[in-house]
Picture 1 (tube, rainbow, N blue to C red):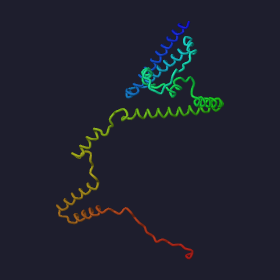
Picture 2 (picture 1 turned 120 degrees about the vertical axis):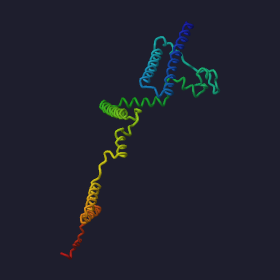
Picture 3 (picture 1 turned 135 degrees about the vertical axis):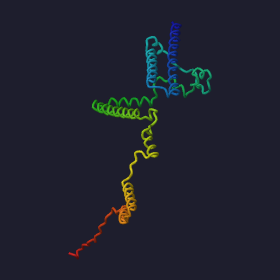
Picture 4 (picture 1 turned 30 degrees about the vertical axis):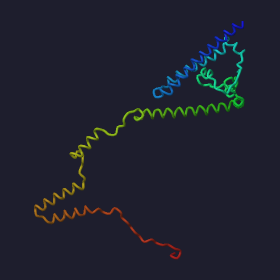
Length: 254
């Protein structure tokens, strides 16, 4: 009977070790992807890895709670010796994670319950949760929903802005147009599209009149045209001032 229990214990431990090894390999693979493939890693792949890890943890928990593993509850792990010196076998067995088996690591690795400080904090949180009324819970739930909707709307607007920004898409910004460049070159080389100002056209017309008048021998017309050009060149003062003497009213002027 004792030999049969030992065989069942060995088989159970081997099954647990194998499942833990698979879970560890999945964790290592996921961490490597996060560290090395973060540029090409998409959200679907991340969710698939999380689903794989969650499934393996759930299967391990169900396996530990099954009837085949119930006899493990009858065994207690007790350390035979504690030593502050380096243990090469333990270091090799744990792949360098636990080089010592001393008073510092034993409580953490052989603990079956949380630390007393953590238990006290959990008890306080549970008491606080049970003391809340249904009305307060509903208010807090509504507030949380409003915050979640606000964050979702903000993220949606930011995504729309980023999708509409050509810089974020990797597209070059358009800094010029071919039509405008062609018009500017034509205007500089041939004067296409440029209109003469009214002042210059009037001056050219008056100069033409002067030339025609001088050719006909009319000095009066020449003088009149020159005086008009002089008056046009003098810009009128656009500011008109009207200074009036200020009336000082005192009580003696009444």
